[in-house]
Image (cartoon, rainbow, N blue to C red; front, side, top):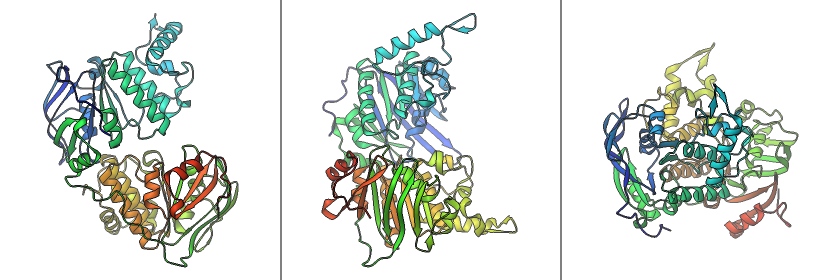
Length: 512
């Protein structure tokens, strides 16, 4: 539902960007983009991965400098050469990857670089008093003396918000702030954002969640391929109009048609009585050509089960069997050799090598295909990588460039390309569309359904219930480390999944 009302015309413009250009090598990330952010509003910037929205946010926050164009602050021309310069002018940024010092306390992180001192020594009492006053004003219940690294993601995000407020920030740039949050934490974040604007602060919200944008933002700017499509009051937009503006076309359907596995399809993955850290006596089967959804709340043990099956985490007991026999040795390389591949939950922390090239990231798991006597045949390696990269439609032809230069959606597709190069019969896909836009999501959905149509068994883990229901033929629900329910056919509803997820064990559940 669109937010009621529109931006009041009398609001004062705080930051204005005029005709901003930005290039990265031969790629034009921004092409003559102009936007204005008004005081006391949420201004959302949306677009497909690679549209330039994060680049725009980084330019406003001083992390990047434009190649052309002007930035005006309160009507005066400015030029930020660093985030510190932008911060001194009242602009702070909260990146998708949070920046806290894990061993420092919460209070020390909030006032990092601006601690109250006397004679070179930090005044601990004054630091604590300032923190408690600031946190109380913001309504945050954070423990001042606890090491920041021990806090949840949502609490670390609050540290960054307090850090911005401690420096009198008038505009806070938030890049995908809810991407890694649970539903309750997302609700709390939205309350915080509203309280910031009520206090006269402005928020530049970079997000791929269209419902979030429609709920929170006063104004929305749409970018496509680095160009400005339009800026409108959010009250004039719907999900359909935003998708059409982002893609340049309507999205015909959120999910591709389902196709059931053939009758009598063999079991390609069998898990029996598996226990591991966070997992208790889990049993499941996946058949050839079947997509099985694994649902549950955050902390239910879904990723822990996936990692234990794949061999990334230690198994305490139980059996994992693939079509070619028992997978007794728990190790990722052994799993890959036996036809089991996995797309991990976090591409940054568990999947990609950000400083290495796209090519290296695709072939790293199967260099033996292109090596003889320890020497890699680069021509054969590139040819094989190009085939799988073309299949998953990675945009950006320079496969020698660092994978970190790609957009989030294309980085995710690189992981799929790596998996395809291994030629698995079974794929575990853990949050395969996290952090990607609607266009890239549909491409990944098509890929998953296509792989299942070719006979691959897929175990799909997702925090988005709609995604599970839209893709899976069966749904297993986890709660507190256990598989508590199996749903099929008409039983597969959002209410049934949530009811099972909130229970410890569902009576009468069918579990293999």
